[in-house]
Length: 130
Length: 199
Image (tube, rainbow over all chains, first blue to last red; front, side, top):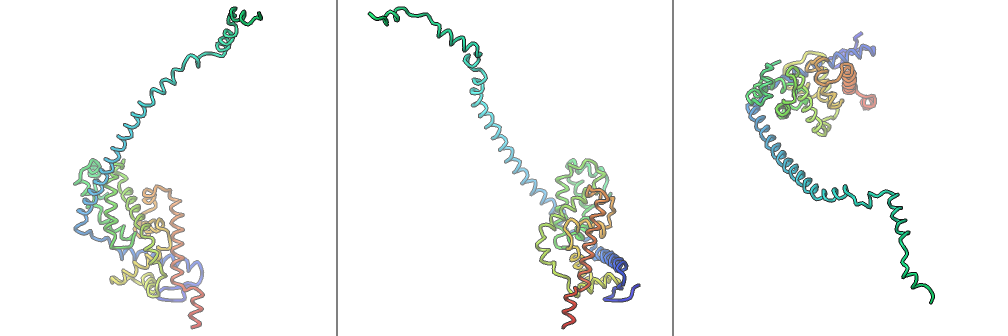
């Protein structure tokens, strides 16, 4: 039911026809766009420019790699030094004194032994009233 | 495939001449695709070079030469997307509604036969660019690959690593947005029509 012509496009009355006509127009437009944009020719400088850009990026990549390597080396060295500094403390912590190894029973026993020390007679006699 | 698998393998091993041959084989196709994806002739060569540079640095990651072409398309899509995203502001400044003349040209192109005059080609390009500005950069690229480049859904599936149904849905929605934009520019809004009647 194409009835109205406007700007070279046939317009339709029903929504379905209008939808189909829009779809068709869009397809035509995309086809025209494909023809309006043919594959362009590359310039003479195309390949040399690619290699120049690749070399430039490789240069910056190697610089970053060097800096990264230097940072890693410094970090490893610092870790080793810190490790050496901390290791005596850690080793002493791993070998605690007998005090820390003693059990509760041992501690009680030691306390009672101190309480049951033999009496010093001379001191007691010194305290007696004359 | 425009090149032999052996050539790709040689390039992967660092053979510069093999890489140059790959570039020579594909450069025209890539230039064409990018020119239609980004729609700015002055930047086509730069973006194409970026694609081949990315190819050079990532060629070692390609496991099987059989997927070389979808993979190259993927690099092309990514480079074009990056370019479009960077130039979003610039594109937005060009997003004014189509002029009356452009609308008439769009109608003329779609309805009658496109003539091979350069001015008309330019207007067709501008019109399609304006219509594609109605969708996101991702959808614009997807729609162009399907509708203009003529890639099949299977090929798009390999490029995007997304299943066919998801692509169909996305393409349908993008197309609907473009159609809506086309309707807006070809049919004047009621307010402007009233204004015209009053004057």
